[in-house]
Image (tube, rainbow over all chains, first blue to last red; front, side, top):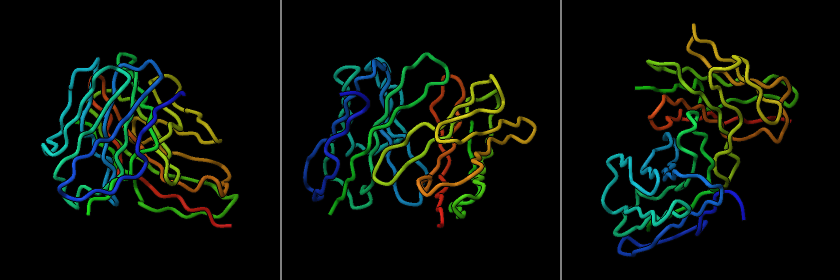
Length: 114
Length: 112
């Protein structure tokens, strides 16, 4: 399988649940990203991992916990979320070091928090 | 810090008409500029990118964009709209060693 794959595509969870989003890339990229896409808001960069090291954390609440065990896999662990966290969560990857740094996106995980 | 402004959150054109989506950027150094497209229930897909080579950049699906430094603009155009072009379009700017910054997006509707 090629490209960036995100699972699950849809997730409904209660505020007390713990769940995880998974992202996998088979492009040989060395950087991975989590973005949050909410209605009527710009894309929000949440986390960036370069060579498995976290290099960006844009003041994301601690109820979101990223994990990057290797350069091909990225997780977003979710716990005690709020209804306002309902959004489309997009994973992306790129080859850092090429300058233009073109991102390849997955199809997203649609999260609904009840 | 770099920023992007997309004029018009929603643009509607007739099938066969010119598509023009506006993007202005702010950057303290020569930037990299991108247009991405998002179809319903999908992630973002790269349409085209400007990396300081030719100022007129051709992308996929007949789209092109022109980098105008004097106007700090990178507008996206297509001569003739097709129904399949209906989607959300995002302009983005990047400076070296900084994350990509996206605009708020413009939803394009194509009317038959």
